Image (cartoon, rainbow, N blue to C red; front, top):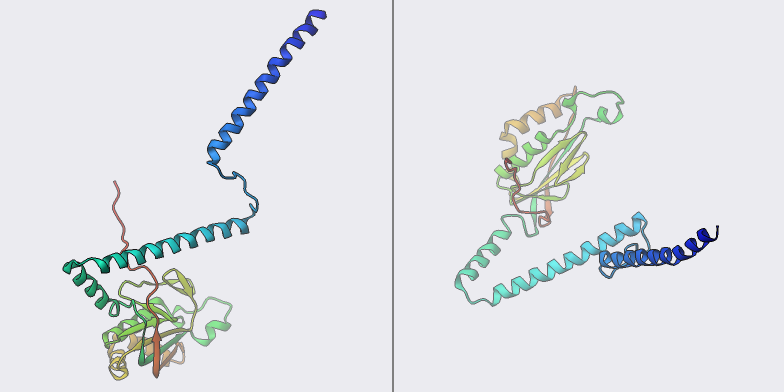
Length: 244
């Protein structure tokens, strides 16, 4: 029994030393992983984390804005005739591509589902609902009629804007909208109305609107002032790529 106790007393300092070494290793590993920051900061609830990410995004946006401003200043300071010519060309293209706000007289087209759709709890006839192709038909007719700018639900439309029908809503640049769908266009109202009245797709929609069995909503009116804000989405082209 005496030998067993002596052996335990001799092993105890070694065990303590081993624990200290292992603990020190953990502290060093944590310090290296943290890189000088707290690995578990206070306010770890979802709301705080979301706010932290939002603040970080805002900071990066501010940084990107500053960098764009610096690039513009550097571009203006360069004496290259080619760069100045290209910059002037870009400036000239901003308005026709929808990157500047414009306003003026035009027309407003309002499309709505049939009144019975709002009160029915059963499946409704799809011919009594405004679809993506109906909206696109009027937008295309307005462009054909020489519209200077077109908006849908107040959002500026450009040549690459996609209008998608998802369920009972229409999605525009990732944002869902419900009827009534309001399309506004700046331009000569007589020319745009003539284009609407000569489009096969809009004529078909008007027939359903005038049919008492369907009663789709359609209102076209001339307006003295239409304001189209500058397009705020991305202008870069995105397309599918084949993979191996």
